[in-house]
Image (cartoon, rainbow, N blue to C red; front, side):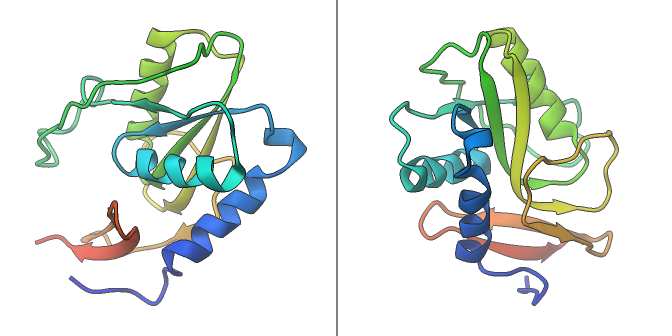
Length: 167
């Protein structure tokens, strides 16, 4: 495992996301984090933005079609949406966007829970290699890595990114 100089520290990326979200265009959004990394980030955003409504969390384990292919064992944590998302502008939050499959799965889960008026996407890092036509609306860092490298969010305390080389 090695750190890469291409990734700014977590605080720098999070501050850029807070600045982008702290505008009139996103003041009415419902914050929903994708479990695990997105949930950690949405907690930080909720605190820093001073939102009164609690954030929501969604678990996409049952919607991913490739967990077995990539060697992951899903950890089912359940979804928690303490608010109605019907007619709401949902800001879906994740740590890293790569193939787009996590976001597709998250949207499937959201639509099983209600009918949002609009879904926007915020992420700290978006890397090359999209398989689906999904892009973040707000993302402070576009990243290019070698095919055998993977960005991993470590946490929850402290939150930090690291680049891991796959064998």
